[in-house]
Amino acid sequence: MTDCFDCLEPPNYAAIARELQQTAFQAESCIFSVERLLRAVPNGPTQIRTSTANLDFSSGTTQDLRVATSTTTFSTLSITNFFLQPLPAGVYEFGAFVQTSAVGAVDANSYRYLYLSVRNQFDPPAIPDQYRATESAFEANNGTGMDMCAITTVALNGSQNVVPQFIHNNTSSQLRINIGAIYWVTRLSDQIALETV
Amino acid sequence: MPANTPIYGFTYPCESDAINASAFATLAQQIDTKLQDVQGDANLAVGRYSSIQSMAPNQGGFASGVEAAFTNAGSTYVVPAAGLYITDCLVAANATTITSMRVRIRLNGVAMYGRSYNNATAAATAGPMVVPGVPMVCAIGDTISAAFLFFGTGAGSASLRINFRMILRLA
Image (cartoon, rainbow over all chains, first blue to last red; front, side):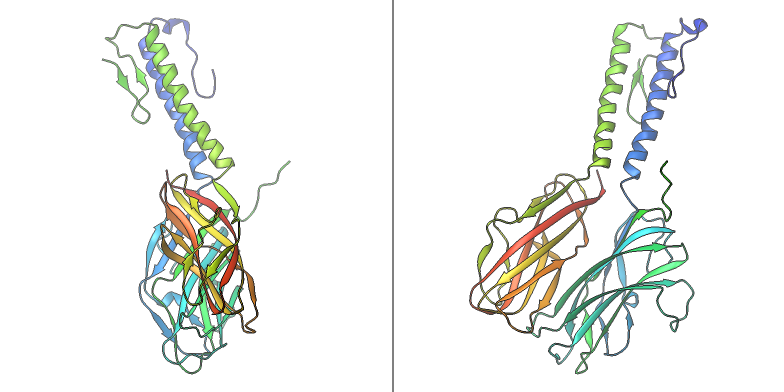
């Protein structure tokens, strides 16, 4: 007997049709299991969210970008919305793209900081981020705004949220995160790698 | 009448069917064919589709304030299999002066994401600047490319190193 197929017993030699049927179903079962594993292992659960509204905010205060309405562009995550729910424990890539423009007057060379942060699920706003990666840009004032794009890798314990945030010092007017901002996560692995002997 | 398994359609004889060598041959061939598909899955799991490309030669003729696509050899990628792909790139530019530049990644000619660079000293060179990348849902045959925009004086030229990697397979 192999892992997939049962050997014929002497009383079964006459039941060839039944044995072929059994062989066919056993082959299908074995191959299906392997095929599912091979497809699941490299395809880390992933979710892409796209904002559906502009978000305007004033300078000097860190703005949580999740407040802008967003839609799920793509998802194979077990949770519906990683903006609202903590991600299952594991190691993830977390990234964002935003296109910013001043609502009114532009302050040339003023800063724009995009934060990719990790926060414990129930921490109040006053508690600092558990982790923060920063993408910085300084307004070029060429009439096209500033595109900003960042990726980071985070290890999550199952009760943490990934949070995109933003702060700027364009004091002459509010800054706009334009509709169509993209936020995404993809799971890379379990938190703890199995020991290799 | 022979019947078929529900997932892969492996054929097996039923009680009333006459059994001959072809029943064995058919089932064996079907299993062998499916195993080749599984081998393909295994190959893909080990070696995901990816490409590292350097555009050659560097591309010139960019006008200040006009966004234009990179078109020289090595600047584009035709998606070989449906999936999520991340494209990141590295760009350096030259002109008489450059005050700012922007690179955007396009999918089938449509801008998807990008990054801007403020060259505050207005030097003749800008960058290199990295555009980190965002996953894009791609179908087989889609084209991924990049576009360049700068502000300054003189005609601009730019180098491009662009990387493509599949992070999730859809088919």
